[in-house]
Length: 298
View (cartoon, one colour):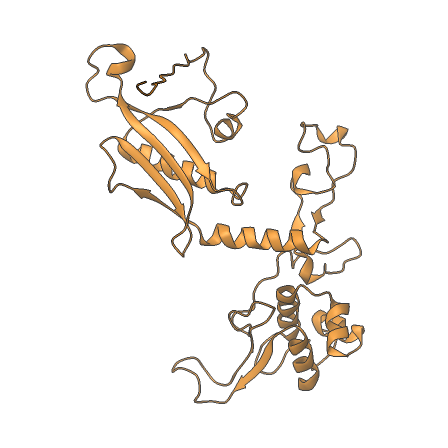
């Protein structure tokens, strides 16, 4: 096992460094000036106890810095000697050490030969055809498994660095975005939910208004209310990340808390797919489109 007496897994740390730097084993070895088989043996746990200088060269080649702190330099209660990797990758960040090695996506997946996939490729499971870039038919129509033109693999990954970076960016956005309801400055009966990033930027919004059932039936129905969804907007560049679904989920939770059983929406032709995917149903009948155009005097 490539594990030091302190209990930290050198192989796991190297995989985390490689993923942060988006390097294959061969590329990391070439940068460090060591044989490619050395990286493979360390990560697979077959290198015994690798030399400190070798590990340091590999970590530095991945953009990190190996640090060792003697006893007494760490905050109280953190234990004895501590080792770690600072600033792994190209964008710096937290130290990668025995207690906070970043989990490599799909680290438990292996190919048919029983080998672990390269850490920098972000392997993910294929649960349905649209998860696999090779399933060109998945986005046009649905086919039963027996009619799929190609067999769907158990796992997939992106070889394109640009797509990997975009997917990782999307994962960070999903983790950081927060959905909240806004009540200040709104007229009575108005509902507004926003999706914010930590820097305060708003990247999504849902608006709705509340109305009495008296308007629908033409007589006093008591305190019965319903909601009309005015729209769900997500900023360009942040779409297809599930932000709209989170906004609508917060809206439904608030409906339940307020005891309002129904919500309605009017969609333009071809634009109702998102709402039906979130549980809305298309009702019979067609709304009447009305407009009011005012011309300036003269």
